[in-house]
Length: 446
Image (cartoon, rainbow, N blue to C red; front, side, top):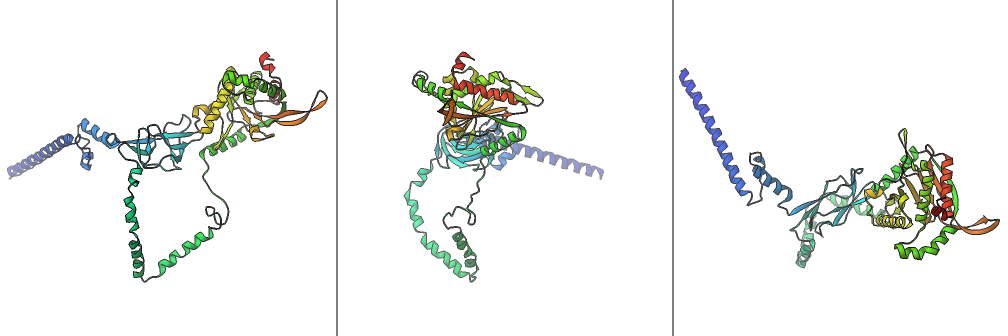
């Protein structure tokens, strides 16, 4: 009896072993057959995904490549790197729509960050198959925005045939069938439910249907750049002990200098001589005379800068931006004018980069171009002071005992009183006044 039981157990074990060997042989033969079929056909079934763990690296590579890039026909447009200090942005708007033809490196969307607007470019030439993200989404570098197909045809070729309009014209009989279905239902409740819907828009249609019916207001999301500006200005008020000192400057000599040499200046340097370059040079001289204004507080330390990077406030349709002119202490008037024109052009076109906005040791804001007579500018963190220029107005001024009409401008210097005392601030603004009223001081360094 015991021998029979032992023989039965041996038979069962042998059968199980043979079954395992057959199943392994089946899997091995299937994988070899499938690996031969994959290069010929790009189809990947569920069985393929389950067996990708088999020791066949070439099969896995072919499957992963075809699944990710669709044999090189489709490409993903992703959000580019936006700068070290920028971690995310808001998808402001799409420049293209599905079915549009795009070229390589052509912008298809715009990402609005805290500082600048960045374009999302197409990696290859093709047709936009679909848009993955939506306007208003918060995206990070590497986020897929759209899929570009190289083999697809533009949407115009699909809309071209006019024969598609004929079946639309044959749709009236379908409209007649709908009331028949409504007549079959004896209930009169559906028309009652639809009755209040037309009455509601009638209340909102007086003269501005896009506005709320009761209050003439529109609620729109605040742009990301506007949020950043608001936060920085409020942080500036909360952090700095801001104080503003004023002075006025007679622009007679500087305007005469500009009118006398403007033609020769353009002929030699290819750029117009403006007032801003004169004030930048005056600010550089004042910062060198009062280096504490060019310094900044960092914790319990004071950092003195032996270079001068001047930030110039530029107003755009999207908000105030402050690009930086670097190493202005080594520039002449022509170099400064070229740098200002280049940054102003970039700001108008929305082409400023993160590098154009980073840094800056002192800021100049010219509210006079908009007609501002006097104002108290707010410090641009983490700087310690800002100079405000204003409009030039003919005012009666006493000159050598005579009352004369002179082109006068108010200047305002807002400074961090934690670091800069009133004495240094007044001396700084007085130096700018002296240099602007007598530009020969720059030549003689007095």
